[in-house]
Length: 618
Image (cartoon, rainbow, N blue to C red; front, side, top):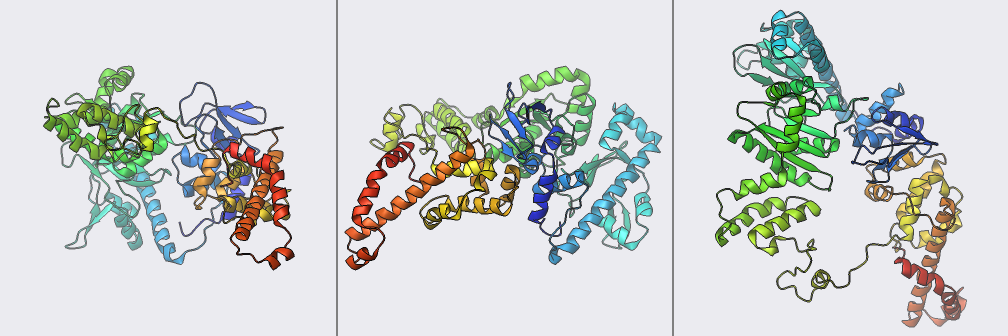
């Protein structure tokens, strides 16, 4: 893009967007009063807990806590980035996305648009080439691919001539430069001669997650090397980021698969789809990269890598495993590996066995990542000897420590501890193994806890968290708040954790009295408080008393004001006791120590309630 999208435009499209209509394109929504409900698309469940609230322009799952605006849904579910999601909504409304102009990037952005346009023109050229080539159509029929599949994947054919594409699309010098920049035409260094990169090949357009053609894969017809050829790295194509076939699975109306099957070639993706096995994507001549892994997990929590069963396939699987370890945070992620019989690929196996047998193979034969990890590192070791067990720890522990802290990493550490008979491999700051005391740590807080001693209670719900949570869920409760009600909180903001967030939220709501919950959350995307606001918006606020959010919010503010006043009086008393405040100043002040004592007595009941709640206002 040529610059940032104005915040006012994002607010406008969210205000004009029907979030139920957007989400309804991807999942089935059932009306429930003024809301809509569905099984959550982000986790497995049997009873619907996913709710869409059109009036507030947000969705929320009471099971897993996922929530957000229409933009957030497109990012979380449809694997779009922020700009893609905004452009998608704008397109539905017939609007053009404005950008705050950045002259330094404008020229480069214009080049990118021109390259995308040239790639799309080439895609049409190749598809027309397939229609006119009986040889290419017969080849595809021999692979079991009919016209419907060819149309679905936009399969084409590059003629055998050296300048077929160049002659058609490169009539002007500027067009020839674009063909070179797009990787479609090669310029020889020795004489500057231009010629087509793809010749006598079946072409498979590679789309990015926005559905734009960014490059091509091509398979030769007949004998020749290389059998498969991909576009080179260009300004718009990076093979370490793109996954062939992923764009198909994120289109509106397409049922989102719960599992992704990662294969090695685009013919496998096409062949599996032809056999009725959807959810397959392919890397493009490279092992799965960290960027690939992030894209996969943004789309599904269950990933199966499919490789040949030979040594080369296992090496490729190991590279994928190493890149996957840092992404294994959260208990809803599962990675498995399926190794195929010798001489078979996913396409041929699905054709021979059929859909049901192949699905059973995925279910029964795919091994968990943890099992593959341990099996690979246990090879050629004898765990009966201290030396073998020590080497196992040396091999495995650095890999396990690449996994983010959490339950999955802890389970692997415990398994390694059992195999190696070495309990020290379990992370000290995470270990909750009953009865286990790390060496040299007797008498520590950890030892008392592990031995069944008293445990600290979890973090309590503070007044500030409750107030912010109510605002994020129902912004209009702030409209009747008077400035004088906020003054004690504003004066105490330096010592009151979260006060700056609360006051900023109220200010935003006052500037836009009609702002919805979804639009309010969206305003903080990319802000330094985004994480805190997102965490607080995952669950509706707990309501007490009459269960009215406005009453609850006003009560939170009242108690926060009382806390601020008590801190002020406490600071004054401490100053008096230290002699730092002169008596003459006391006489002239609005409060005396006697009045302080009286006010403190009145506040005793509230103080006890706050202590029971576990909150000091921070």
